[in-house]
Length: 390
Image (tube, rainbow, N blue to C red; front, top):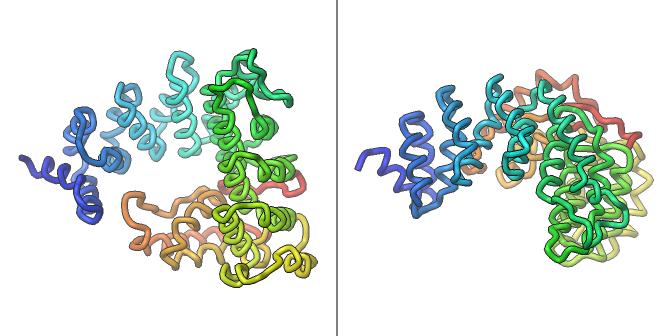
């Protein structure tokens, strides 16, 4: 057994050993690619997802043609890993190939959606025209347009829900490039329902509401206020998160009002987000018998048209400082990515507890960009948004 094969075997061991083996395989680089692909393709008995991380994390230009070939592989794990790997590569050929894949109606919808997502993560505005044309074309498709009816899709109307997912992913990709022109379609999809017993309408609504973390515009807050009352648990969960990432006075008020109507899990989620927005510790919020009375007593301290964090107009430096706290890093690094579009050197295969470099990278970045981000303003992927249009 070669050293590489031995390391591949170790990825099926205990977490600490497996994590170390993945790291060593990534450091070796291109020589591990073929044996890793073979292990995934031929039914490796261990955690295949760990091997997929290796394909995503090797930073070598030689891997580009390998990944571009794998997006068409019959093995879905390999194809997904390839799309995720390509989404981290800022290369003209990669962007061109992903656009060609996205517009090809003969390709599987699930992979077209991955292509749109990859383009959004790369973030090069050269892809805007392609994403715009795909989104516009899908909205007018006879098998998609019934989804935008306020009355829902009747059982006699066929809706291609796979293509709706391609649409949502394309709209989110555009939002990451500063384009929010299709927000009305997202708002309509957040209300999507179908009488078809096989419909995934709840999943579609969840995805639409989740996308409001990224794409905003006129009517978003009102839409979230309706979605937070949705009968489907996950839609409400996504609405809570999207409201947090907007963080206005109206969002805080709605979260507090919703609290008494939620079960214990989502109630805790709301308390955490109200704590994040107001700065009052979670434990103290738990001890308040009537949260709405408490909020009513301090509401006058908050103004409309301002985004809040930690009880004051959001200051990005305050959020960056939270990266010093290991157990907060997972949430904070996502928050910073949504605001700035930066990942600050996040290593997805390594425990966040050990990634102290995240804070140092973000602090260095902040010294160069502190004049760009104004306190109390809403930013999505580095683009300032007009709070008057929410």
